[in-house]
Every structure is written in structure tokens, then in C-alpha cells.
Length: 357
Image (cartoon, rainbow, N blue to C red; front, side, top):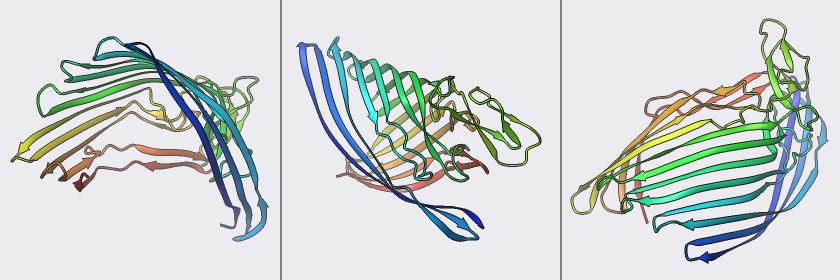
């Protein structure tokens, strides 16, 4: 290239933690648990960036900086045994994720620490002589200063880290593992998730959200849910405007996922066995970035294997992943030049020799 920016940056992290947890039985069937943790994180940013002029490195801009955070977090939980096979629980957790820098845009300020208040309640059970394990939980997360990556808001080919003011998550998770007859297991579950930005760009908010538009485009309504306008036929690349995506789905958080699998074992001789495994997964789709423009559509995957175990330690397995050859994306990133995409692996097959010790 004739011009541009060459980035040479490093990030060193020192993290220390001290934690403890206590449990106490109020009654023979009721247990309370409490814990506390202190975390100290220090990050040192070094290096810098060069301006490239006529394919030569120009002036160097150092980007040395340091941030340090020390925070207390905690956990409280209660568990009630209804029977020997069924129990209820509820918990509250306060979590912390330290602030950090974007190595692709080292001249940008560090993002603020992220905090989460997590509430969960559920049931755990083993039924029918332990032939069925069934667990279910509901949860709610309040996340503040949510850290999110954006290539759209950075320089061409670079990325930055941003804080969204807040995210709220509600969910339901169910899983089961059944053994209806000897040598057969059927297992699976599903997760329903409602993960949304509760505030990312509302009027008066400290943080605005990047929203991309295909060029030619202009940013004409900052702070709105639709802050830009496309002004003509597509000429290539994107323009990034900043607006309000409150209520939008968070990146990488599908509304619904499910799995269903089975495993069947056939004894061979006195010590060996032939094992068949099949697992299907469904994903309802999700956005890759805050504005929801680049998305992964709904998709399903099927994996399977056949294994022969000589004994409890030695075995050989023939396996296949994504057997149906589903085409889906591992990543989509918007930049000033356009969208960069990485496809996930196609149908893949192999043989593995296993040894357990």
C-alpha cells in the first residue's frame, strides 16, 4: 500500500484475586451459601503506531498507558431439597470484567469495566430410579458498561472497543438426559433467550452505537435509531453513523437454541463395545454487531460418530461434523471498506485413536 497506518502494540495484564465461600445448613434439607471475591487487574499498554507514506514507515506515535481496577464481587445462594431426588435453588451473583484497550486502535481510550447482576432460580432432579435427569432454570441479567467490539467505528481495517450503557437478559434453560433402556442414552435441551440493549444511544446517554450504511451515505440524524441515509446507488464500502439501538438484539445471542442427541452402545466380546453417537443442534440466528445489519440466519448442524472400544481404555472413532454440509458464518465484520466474512467449517470427517488414563 502507498499509505496507511502500521500498528505495533502490546498489552500486558496482571490479575490477582482472593476469594472465599461458606455454606451452612439451616435445616437438614435447606442450605445457604455465601461467597466474596476481590479482584485486582492492571493492564499496561505499550508500543504505538506508524504512519505509512509511499510504502515506508513514517513518524511513530507512542501509545503507552496504564489502567488498574480493584473490585469486590459476591455470591449468595439457597438450596432446598424437596426429596432425595428433587431440589430447588435460587442465587444472586455480582460479577466484574476489568476495563481494557483495543490493540487494533491503541490510541483510543480504554473501555470502562463491565458489571453484571445475575439472578437465577431453578430445579434439579433425578427421576425414575435415576433413569431421567431433568434440570430447568430461569435467569435475569442486568449488565452495565457492556463491552462490545466494533470494526465499523474504527479506522479502515481496524477495530475499537466500546461501552454500551446497559443490557438486560432474560432466559429459560431446560436440559435432560434419559436412559430409557440399557445401553441407550437420549439427551438434549433448549434455551430461550431475550438479550437486548436496554440503553445504547438513548437521548442523554454517554454512549452512542455505531450503525453502518452502504455508500454513498450521509449521517443526518445522530442519536436516532436510523441516524443515516443512503443517497444513491451502491458504490462500495460503508459509512458509520452513530445512533440509538436500544431494544436491539445483542451480538451473538440467539433467541432460541436447541439440541437433541442419542448414544447407543453394543457390547462386543467380554471387554469391547461398539458405540454410535448422533447429535443435532438448532440456532435461530443472531446479529454479529450492535446495529443488527450483518446477521447469521437460522441454521442446524448434525454431528455423528461410530467408535469401537477394545476395552475401557483403548478405542478408535470415525466421526463426522456438520454432516449435512450446512453453510453458516463464524464471523461477519463491517469496516469502512465493506463486510469481511469468515465461513464456519464445512462437512468434516476424521478418525481418532483414543486412550483414557
